[in-house]
Length: 199
Image (tube, rainbow, N blue to C red; front, side):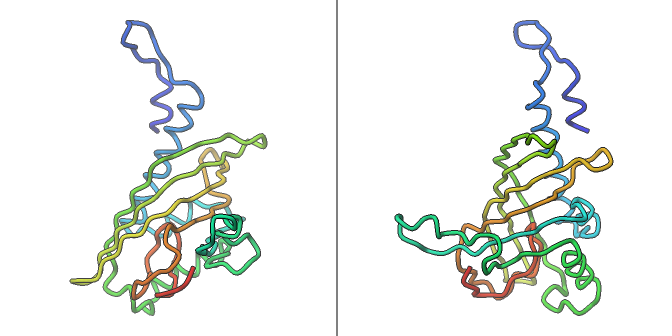
């Protein structure tokens, strides 16, 4: 693992030995986690992707509204309000199983995707879990002429399970509040939503 490798001391520019601090090592370890997640999605290894989540995962994607500056507190719908997604592990497993069922017509032939993840911020929590915020860009190409570019951010709570990190809670916020695409049937680190939907 890159995080383990970075714990090895290395030579600094002044000839002294420099080792990454604990926060730096954690940042590199989680950056590798997110890069691996992106490759799993791009290579359509969705069952392996599901293994990155805890059994009690809360997968939440609120709606985003256009509001005046004085009402910015209403821009994103809270948990429990009408949302695009508010799902658990069982529903995520159902989404993946549907892709293998032959009934997901919008994804046959499958889309080609490229997930880019960056701007990682990491905050250790008192209970041993970690809060991590990332930004993402997802490009999707389907058939000959259909393509999309979507951007947004994710706020995760990560937990160590059996010596590895897993996502225990994910909140996904799209930059757009209306999706004008014919369909959104790929995992952008979230699942399919209806076309032209007002988020």
